[in-house]
Length: 197
Image (cartoon, rainbow, N blue to C red; front, side):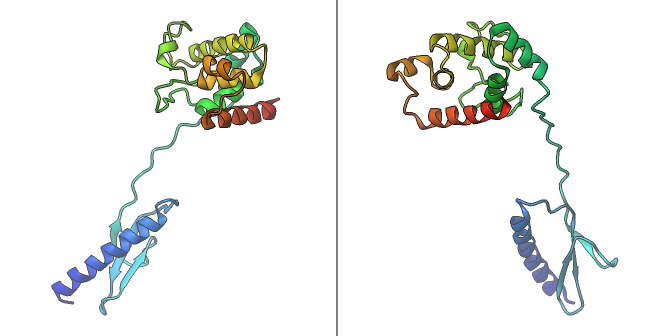
C-alpha cells in the first residue's frame, strides 16, 4: 500500500476513532483500541487484538478512583450533635445528604463549605474554625439548625427554608418563600428525613 493511501486511511481512522470515543464517552469503554489496515485498505478496530498486525490506536486513560462516600461514616458525629442540641438524628442526616451528599470537602458555587454547607460569613458566629473538619462542621450546622427550629417554633419545613434561604425571608413570608430552589430543597430534605425515620 502506498504511503499516501496509508496516510489517508489513518486520517479516516482518526475520524472514526473520535466518533467512537464520543459515542462511548459517557460509558465505560474499558480498554485500549487497536487498529489494523489490511492489504485491501480495510480498517479493522478492536479492543482485543487477535494478531500482531494490530497497533494501539487509542490508549485508555487510567481513571482515578472516586473517594468512597458512605452515608454511615458520620453517624457517631451526627448522634453527638443530635444529643447536644436536641435536633433529630434523621433530620441532621437528611440535611447533610441534601447539602453535600456526605462529602466533607464539598464547596458549593456560592462558597458554602463542608458536610452541612456553611457559608464563610457564618463561621465566627457558629465558632467554626475548621470548616472541612466533619465534626466541627456538623456541630456548627446543627447548632444553627437548633436555633432555626427554636425561632420557627419547631416547624421543620420553615426551619429548613430558613437554613436554605435565610430566616429573614421566611419571616417576611411567614411561610416557605416562593423561591424554586428553596421549595425544592425543603421537599428533598423532608423526603430524606422520612426515609431515615
